[in-house]
Amino acid sequence: MSLQLILAAILPALLLCLLMYFLDKYDREAFVPLVLSFALGMLCALPAVGIQWLAVKAGIEESNHIIFLLINVFIVVALSEEVVKLVVILLYPYRQSFFDEPLDGIVYMMMIGMGFAMVENLIYAQKFGMETTLVRSFTAVPAHAIFAVILGYFVGLSKFVELDKKRLIGKGLLITVLVHGIYDFFLLQEYYDWLMIFGLAVILLGFILSWKLIRVHQKRSPFFEEAGDKSQGSKIAGKENMETEELP
Image (tube, rainbow, N blue to C red; front, side, top):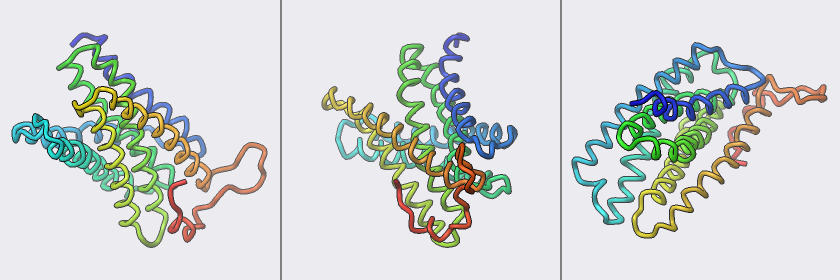
């Protein structure tokens, strides 16, 4: 691959990581855990790619039948990808002392998701070239960022509640898989070209939702103080309220 193609494949993920780093403005994470999470995200792309390769061998991806399409987008792709990313965050950053506010769920899931997305983008770049890579820079990579924010929101929330940790994580995984699957369905279906517009609508609505979820966890941070406001920000001590809180 040319240097230009490699840069086109990796820059979108790196820029979104940088954006998330600056949005974590009240208690910015250390460089090493962020980089390690990103690297683990790259590694976890391998089992997901393996599962999808097996699906191709089984003929699931090639079938035009809507049942096989739904199995492919919701189970083979969405479920496998989100599960491997969830496993990474639960095994590493979630267990560490530096995971000390709900927003860290989004921050570290973003690093993992962007590591995953970068590897995926490099694979597509090698297979399909610059045009596909540039399209994915404005579609697939931002979509993975949206999935990371949604799942990270619930993972971060679960860390600081006494009860229903598994329920919150399960709920986040379910919602993320549904959003991921719906996005992939609209882009991969070959029945009507105009339905692809709804895939782009998922990205637009996903960005709006992601911004709201990030803002919720920013304000929930124990390190939060709004500019000009001398009052103390929302404390994690209000854990009981978190247990019943839903998506904004």
